[in-house]
Length: 453
Image (cartoon, one colour):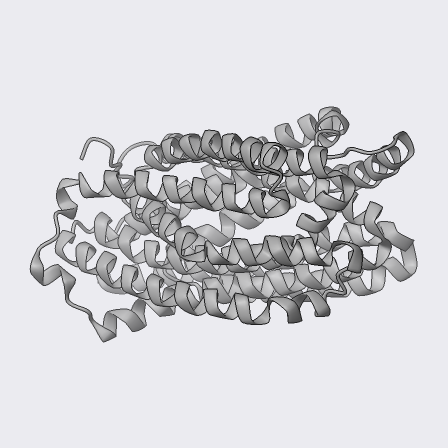
């Protein structure tokens, strides 16, 4: 129990920040091995290698986003039960969440393999990288059950206030991934398949690490009655998880439309665009961490009936997030070119052209970073309240804005227009979330007043 964190008492800002810090470090290690993965591919296989991996980027993210949507949705119920100290129900929720996660993983694995070739056709993947892109994508899809297991286990731990174990799991996975990358790609010459295999095996190790920790938590000593499957609970969990999974699915479809436009600009543009996208995770690493922290904080306090703490926590989390975004933006603007060169290899002209594309995109995203951080904190707070429909609507707004910008802005601004599609998506979601937050809080206050009365 010492590793678990009850967020219903104490300073809201301090609790949110201290919970988010291990998540940030864990996400940094995850991004570190993702970046290392891309850097090794780029340096060993050249621009064509990084372009092949980049062409699969949004399809991989689509599967990962759906997995995270389901498991984060399930975690909302776990946070509320933990905050209410209903440990028997918590254990049953975990069992039913595991059942739904396994079923979802099988369906996504089958769908990914069946529709892989069709997706590459839709995205107009260049023939020069199509074979490697297909190989990389299929290998990553085979790892879906492993990724699902890790995200479920990490969600369980985070819902109980344990942000440190996922950190330690990511540290182990980072070193394993990089070691296997260096073995599989330059030594064994396994190409992009080796990079994918290294990622999946590292994720397996992190999943096992989290599982061992879960098995040692006293309140999660499962009894026979905890294993009962409950159809009503399944519906409740899917009501939480499905909108979040659909939200991420819709966002990824918008991303694939962007990728289809990018694929029409040639291999050098694809490589530069991909190099910056590999840093996308670094840009939002703190945002997702504050988001996870806010979901847990909100869920626990809602379960404990401490409604007044939720708004206070939201304000303090938002301030922390915006300040953090400014710091990260400054680092990327100042050191971005040096970092991007880790992914780019080729003759001097090719390198210069690719770097120019990558840095223009990175600069634009960096100066707009506060818009993204507002999105994560606000959306996560609403999700922690158990409302996953309004955040899904914000995801649809992201899709609409990203797609419209990707299709229209290149006509007006040329290739650079595609860089603003992501910014437009963030802004569209923020508008929806701004009104959704105040609607949700007003509804919560009315419900609390009626309950007290």
